[in-house]
Image (tube, rainbow, N blue to C red):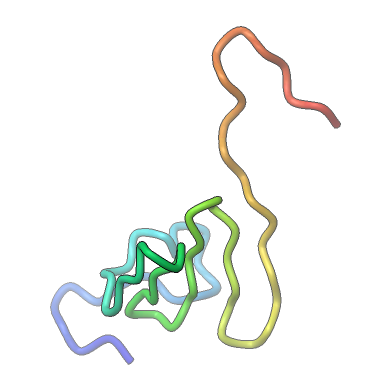
Length: 67
């Protein structure tokens, strides 16, 4: 899907969120990245193969994340 140089990271790469935005819909809370990943405002992701990545916002300073 990526046709520019340098190529964007693939959807399976750990740095997949670094891909370029090709469609942005802030009013709906999502963006489509060049690698076909849907990135949601809550930092969750939907990968092209249907897998989901849970939101992964960092915990606010001074607070511990719950396990």
